[in-house]
Picture: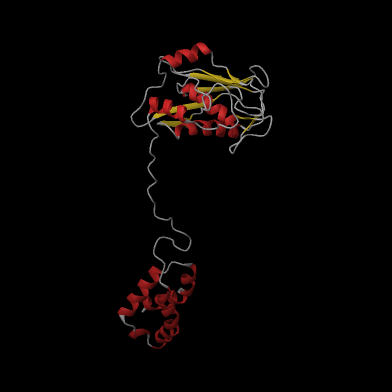
Length: 274
């Protein structure tokens, strides 16, 4: 890929997919077998990219692939084992800075795995908003271009992501790119929203409803009277009062309620001994 369309860089950074392959891809529809519920596209990385942690480079690869999945029916997935990946990404010197950025194989004919290579000598950055800093190359848009090849796209017209020259102003698929991707893989796969789950119990809600504050207030008022009643007439306590106390104690859930009902627990134990 080479920068163009008014960028600050010269017209020398190119995608190194051979033109013979590009012409062959243009004359036919190269693609992976389309699946009715979305076509899985698995990628794996063989090497580290200088200037990036392995996680940062992986995130850049998946962001580039996801930008294609946003406009067509593919399902991006990263796999740790290169042997099981559809696209294997290598990193190494190609021709030094400011030359060939990367290359990719295309799925023309029966293929089980495609290879890509990115030049480790380039001045790569990850830059999402607008053109990258002067003299730097946004690796995400280059990855998206090369993965476009891995999905079967040839080079496209100027002004598109798949144009043969790199543009610091184009970071996502454009009209030609989108039409070609959807011709092969259909529209984007609708993702069902997650099913709402009930909130997990909290320390103040260990499994049951929180006791209404009104009940707690009444217990505070009744506590001294109940305590005096038990002391004066422990043998005359009504079974109904006992059941009420048991029920209220069972429903107490918050730390505050447990503390307040500690005295009632003592009353209950006195009643049970009667």
